[in-house]
Amino acid sequence: MNKILAGARAALLPALALTVALGAPGVSVAQAAPAVPATITMVVPFPPGGSNDVFARVLAEKLGAKLSTTVIVENRPGAGGAIGAEYVARAPKDGSVLMLSSSTLTTNAAVQTNLKYDVVRSFAPVAMLARSPMALVVGKDSPYQSMADLLAAGRKEPGKLTYGSAGLGSVNQMASEILAGGEKTSFTHVPYKGMSHALNDLAGGRVDFVIGSFASTASLLKGGKLRVLAVTSPERSQFYPALPTIGEGQPGYAVELWWGVLAPAGTPAPLVDKLNAEIRGIVNDQKMRAMFAEESAVPAELTVPQFADLVRADAAKWKQVASDRNISIQ
Image (cartoon, rainbow, N blue to C red):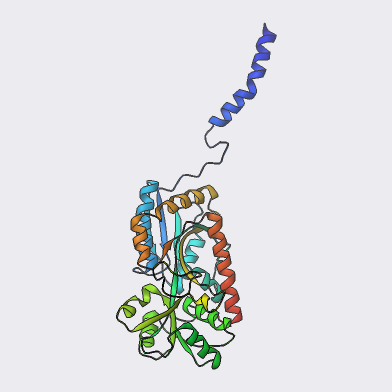
């Protein structure tokens, strides 16, 4: 009898061990996502009022509701976004600090030589929100009626065409230098302290063209003081289907602005995946789509690996442009 009971107990031990293991706190067959922090700080590395800030505030409200947590937006501007990015790179790796940034993150990394973080290694890309083309604009009285006119003039007399930008190392400069490189020519860069000054001088005929966001050019376009020759995206914009792409005249040209959420590198992958899933669900919300449309942007529903690939590719591309065109900020 004792032998029978002993044998039965022995047979049950593996099953009991499995039951205990599966029922034990913190143990599961598939790794569970860590608990979402009670409070999440979403850092915006730019001043209040811009597109990054506006997107962050709407996203924070909706993400907080989805996760049953509090999401606070905190602006940490300075050095073109580098101050806020450095803060996030050094933040706890538990999901309590996120950053809503933009493609400026990768252009900064290409031209600023004194950054205290690595744009690829210091962050865990979480979710991309949206992407948008820029517009190549000229003054209303410009002699250039098409991209073909502009590029022909640029090739004919290297250095004669002038373009304005928001400053040295800005995406406006980088996008313009890709254009010059593709034509094997050069344009003369006129850096300003912000896009409004560059666009006002463009409207006044003091520079030949500017590549800028649709949001920044909107008021002057509506006022008839500027004209759009082309968009920078790889395909025509759904908002402006009649406008050609620059790539139609210079094959391979493609530049897009993007916005996305990143966390400090080392944030647990299951938590990053959870945040990605929630944010991807939010970006197609009617309010979000309407907000993106004001920036001529469309929602982006990339997986974590897809967004990480985009950040890496963007960083490599801008680094090459900065090297080829000798652009740097000490």
